[in-house]
Image (cartoon, rainbow, N blue to C red; front, side):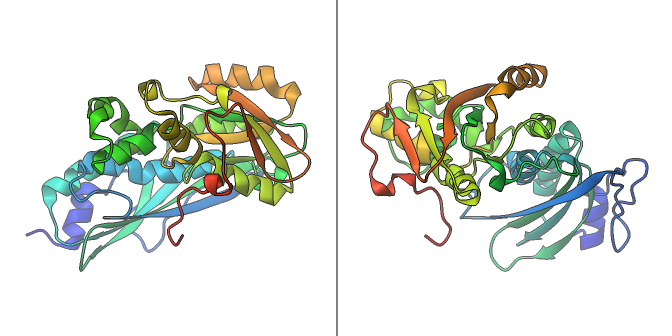
Amino acid sequence: MAGEFELIGRHFNWPAPQGYLGVGDDCALLPVATGHRLAVTTDLLVEGCHFFPDVDPETLGHKALAVNVSDLGAMGARPIGCVLGLSLPRADDAWLAAFARGFRALADAVNCPLVGGDTTRSPSGVIISVTAMGEVPVGSALKRSAARPGDDLWVTGVLGGAHVALELLQGRHPQYDDRLDALQPCLERPIPPVAFGAALAGHAHAAIDISDGLLQDLGHILKASACGADIDFGLLPVHPALEGLPPELVQSAVLNGGDVYQLCFTAAPDMRETITDLAGQYGVSASRVGRIRAGTGIHVGNSLLPLGADSYAGFDHFG
């Protein structure tokens, strides 16, 4: 059986880009451009909480990095590198090869090289920790506190797919199982618009990635910015595979469903043409779905169903 360092060398000792010091020393060394700040984010994925034990390891490798680089995009930061912590019950070479393949494919796609990390034995299930780093020009970060009354409210991608996929995998709504093939990639292989997020720096005001539900995550922006928001439900981009599902299921999935890893951001109305052009340039769908206003709270107009006081609740690990 291969030991820890042999496994690291076999699966994760990838060449570092020129100017980097990567795997093999006590610390990695990463260059940060003059006039930029370092952006750092970290996320944990725990078996049984964030993913099913039988999930395909290649898709898990993809998602482990995706949830982190999504945060970089939400700050307007360009990825420059990441480190991986991996705790495993046993050293399964085939599992590690597939995990590394999925992780590296996304790392290469978004230019976020793996430059270090750690492996340990876990007493119960797989635990994954990724820390991703990026750079953003000074004064251009898309902070949650920067939304302004009068801003347009935008959302990238489509909503609701990951939530319904999760519920189908949990055995709920078996009458709609025929939709799982179309929806499961939303849950297991999200494609965060990282490069588009970095391009928004200096053009948009505030942003957040939708990880715990649109209303809950937008609520973080509104709290930090001391603003309210109006959303037109009819303008929200709904995954096409949700067409024909019960209205209450669609509404819950779109407004409260997590694991989306798309952007919710605000920008001045005079940025509409610029944002539309950037979305086309980066192959991203960006929908203008409402506006930021003075006051507090979120008003959802033209919703399919009345929204109660608990309708803003998204995912909460300790809720």
